Length: 271
View 1: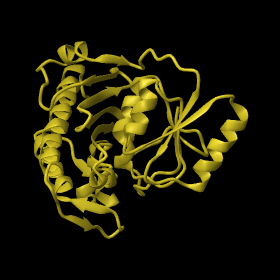
View 2: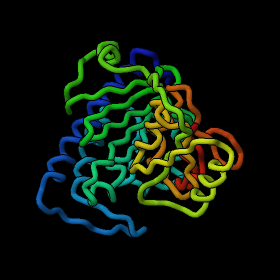
View 3: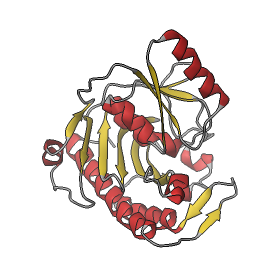
């Protein structure tokens, strides 16, 4: 089945609404004085917000004829997945550690993938009330929107947003890095850049907001020299590519691809 423009527009709006409905549930948990934190088998944290957001997104996307790969529902054998030429890749709560720290730097990520490549991505940051969406054939956009305040027409939504990258005036070379997953390799990269460029600024941030900052044009590069999973990057890559940026494998310089047998990403760079 070929996805026509009208259908893609509809799917993008479905994903935007799903991200905002999930965000509302996440904020309900976030506003509690206390919430349960469990540890998954890989030693990463899991909260009620992750579970609730996952179910809301799955329910919203299920009416589409496209299978879903989600961080919280990821145990799908490759023998089944490898036959999917299209799929949704979802991270219901990207930045669970930031959520637990209550620093606001977490997002909801939804991407539509076709033949291993992002068609579009949607990222919503609930605390910042910041929406990002885009893809190669859509362009990329960002706007501050209250949860669930979304028009029924994609063109109307685009008119409410700013096209990315933004027009930004700055004098330094800005490198984004992970707030919770720093590595010696990243530190070495930053030091190397400091020797090559007069003014270098290093900014730490959580979740896929790092990719969004490069898409916005407020940062030059985000080198991820450490482990991530496909659901951490798929939506951000769609937005970055819509903004004319690239997301490439560190060693090969080839675009990062999706629905691989091993869902663990190689090192990559966004620029």
